[in-house]
Length: 525
Image 1 (cartoon, one colour):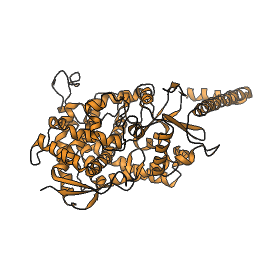
Image 2: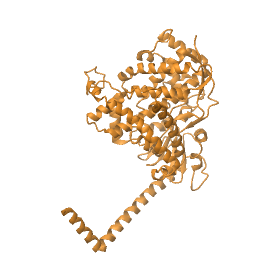
Image 3: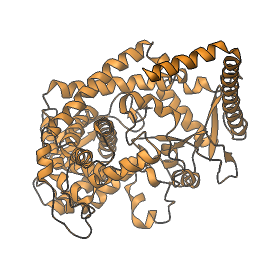
Image 4: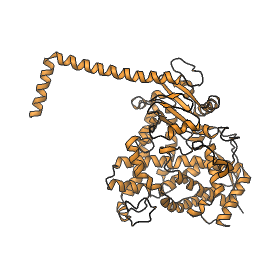
């Protein structure tokens, strides 16, 4: 009772003395005013400095370039490409009191991406927060460092070697599906999307899912619909605030989709948690000096197993944190790779000579028939790897990334990016810069021969980002793509239906073909 009496006495004194009330009101008012002035000064400074950058003329004094940023995705992509050619090495766009500078030169990319200082994701990623929360993609600072440290062992080469058998098995399942759709145009993206989702579940999550399971199909459809809604939200910056967004039809639809997506991933986690005794049994003996687990003496486990073990070991991750990372990797681990595979299949189908050379390379390494490759044999597929790299140059799965500048930063041109500004690193436009890649729209895997690439700027090819925040799963993705392409080319010849000239590119956070990617498959004799 005593604390209650003290509170009551304090409130009585407060109300009996108007001086204290006035003081509190004034302190609150002055603090609020100082905050508003501080935020206003930061915005004014950003707008003042962005005016020093070249860029398209602002059509509105108040709204700036909002009309450009709120266009349909394919038109926005085309306009940004046009500005990138015209205003190289950087240009600025403004929407009301916010501004973004687009970075197009490898030298400037290195300044921003090569430093640990600028690790905070840009404002545009706010649209993902309701879905992915504060997982590895969106987190920053100490949390990101801690999570990256926990997850890095999951992608050690000794684990990836064990995943090849799963990639091969899922490739066989994909080949069976394709064989029932031969000699007619088919959209390959949904097919490879099913393959990549099955693969990420069995490898990283340690859970095999039934391809006929309605939940699995509903999960894929829900992601497709959610990404469409997120794309609409990205074009409406005034809806970045959740309290306003969830009053809209799109916000209500997103809530329903997120319930379904989170239910699916929680079921994956729950299945694996039911086998936590298996994880405990996987404690291991030392496996060699190069094994990064030697210090912890743990067996090489799937990513979800490592997260669960970290929770058991008290390594600063709880159940909510595990959910964040599973949501992040289930999305990033299947959708990005699926679209990358779609573009790669289209390019190989359009270049029959290169397709035949890849097939001969496969036969040289694996012999005739359909024997599946081992990890070491995949490393020998040099032409195939160069084709994948060239495909990712032309069609990087993530065409741009956004960061917030953490301190005033001087670019190679001498212009300064002020603290707090959003920067957009235009990966696709860097990859198609004719000064770096002559005849940049041509599909030429020989660009990645050692003699042709050794003098190339290290930030001129960044399909998996670069620097401290590079993609943790890039080796996983390349192995997965190699495995499935080998499985397909062992059984089928491909002929082109869609071409680079006929597809219309669009992007939410991932580069896509608006109308899918159609290829025709023909069984080999």
